[in-house]
Length: 116
Image 1: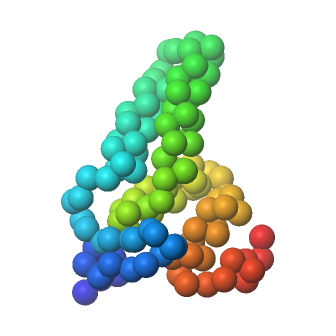
Image 2: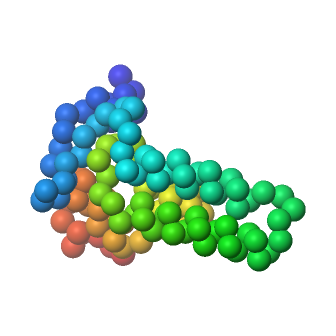
């Protein structure tokens, strides 16, 4: 069994009070819907030949969807992975302290252990 297989078949875990992390491979969630929209917007904002002003306008819409997605708790392992991709800009940026707090909650580690 690969690690990815484990993440998609693991039992439900309690993450934060009132929040459950269910590992379902194909379940549609608010984050999955927003992520699909964000990907569409991201591709649209990077089209060749658009003006700087148009690019900035499109990125503003993209960022609004990003912020909406980041305020939601992950319901599945895939949600968490989607949030991670957005948080790090597909590897360009470092995650925020708030995001690492969510990582700690998922791992059952006190946020005080974070070094950032």
